[in-house]
Length: 451
Image (cartoon, rainbow, N blue to C red; front, top):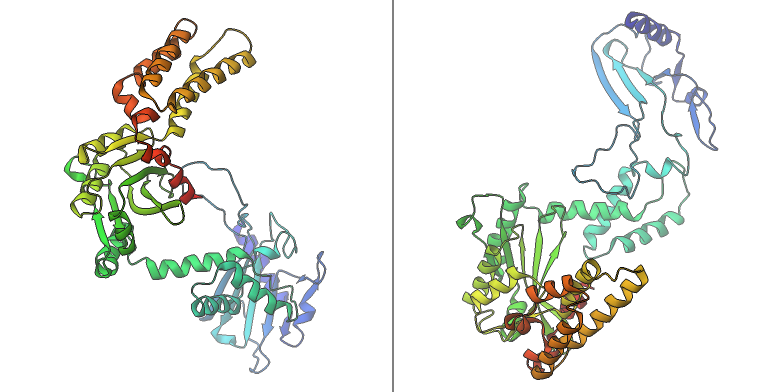
């Protein structure tokens, strides 16, 4: 079978007409797409007119002067690198198209170039203005233009560069074989340039250490690299941070802080970004003054980070820390700053109650009646939370327990176990905190900075 196919291709080569650059148009025919031409045959030959022709059989495998194989720009298939399954947001241009073009020039007939088109296009319509032309790679000249503009104006956004190039294109004659540039063309080139500039080593951790020692430390940055292997044999665990000089000034002058943990900030699902934010007195908004990036969810990196802040005189005698309902953060703060008041973010406290109310409060009737009782209990708890007088607060707590102990024992049992102690009152009750800390009852300053 293979020999028969080779014989057929050899016969096709011998029968293929020889074209010159002057009459190459005769090798093309109209396609189903307007203004797009296609090859009339799968094999065709171009003869260079400035070179002398000979009658040597070009099918004989003599010494090859030049050989190149081109695949369709929509060949191959896309395999996501991440093992986690995510919804497809944008279709890949790779559709496993089998079309291939080979160009060969032999030494015994150096003026002849053999173009062999192997297999037809599959799974797409070549040249379609809606589905295909937009996926053609940019020309080298267009890519060079983007790089030149980004180099000349390193602070320019992808949107601005795109508009400038599109304005230039509109003043030129439009060509079908040159697609218009889009936002992602420039954004991807910015990422590539940034990768070259900022990625000092192919290993991310070595690149980070080079940045710390060679770039940041000489400029007055305070660097923290956690030694998590002192309590764990896992070599992949890390914790790191740096503080800019102007952040050092801000954090030293503050006495009240918000600390928050943000998850899913990188492609690695275990990475956490811890942020310490203070209130900017002039803007009345959150101002980030310390970070820590780690993949360890335990108490260890938080303790090392807080101890580092204390040793470097950045946070010495804090009056209050507002945190999420995190035992790890609370225990670490109490270990390093034993005289500091801890305030749970009241929004997170109410959310924790809301989730448990949905799970444990049932009236045995309709869902609407369940929601009515759950809303009534949550409103009661919020009144207790924001009560400013300790005696009234304790009376309201006793009233709540007595009112719902018989009808909703599951939730009351949860509340007594997790929130009904003097130590817990001190972290979630408004009555146990000074009035000057009233603006720090939630982590809104961190949320305002995130937004």
